[in-house]
Amino acid sequence: MSSNTPHELHEEFPEHSAKITELKQSDAHFARLAEEYHEINRAVHRAETHVEPMDSLAEGEMRKKRGALKDELYRMLSA
Image 1 (cartoon, rainbow, N blue to C red):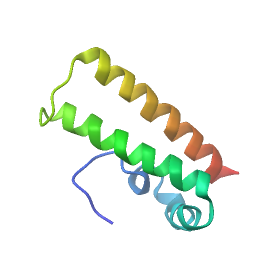
Image 2 (cartoon, rainbow, N blue to C red; image 1 turned 30 degrees about the vertical axis):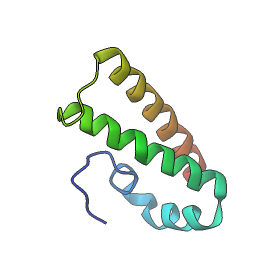
Image 3 (spheres, rainbow, N blue to C red; image 1 turned 135 degrees about the horizontal axis):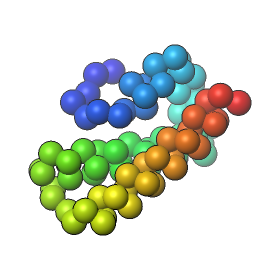
Image 4 (cartoon, helix red, strand yellow; image 1 turned 90 degrees about the vertical axis):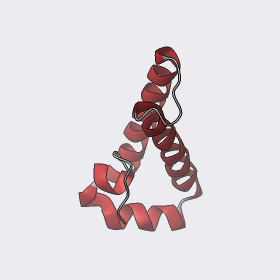
């Protein structure tokens, strides 16, 4: 699955690619978090590339949320 947006889950955790796909289908909580991560990641990317500029405070908050989601998803993948 290739994408122009950096930081997609399969790129962040290539060693867990199969497990990401499996958990998206079998674990509703994981699927919800992955979808939320994807949406925030896309929004951060749009802000970074000035497609949808936003103030730096809002962008920083989104980056923090993306980081927290990534940590939680990694914890679930590593369990």
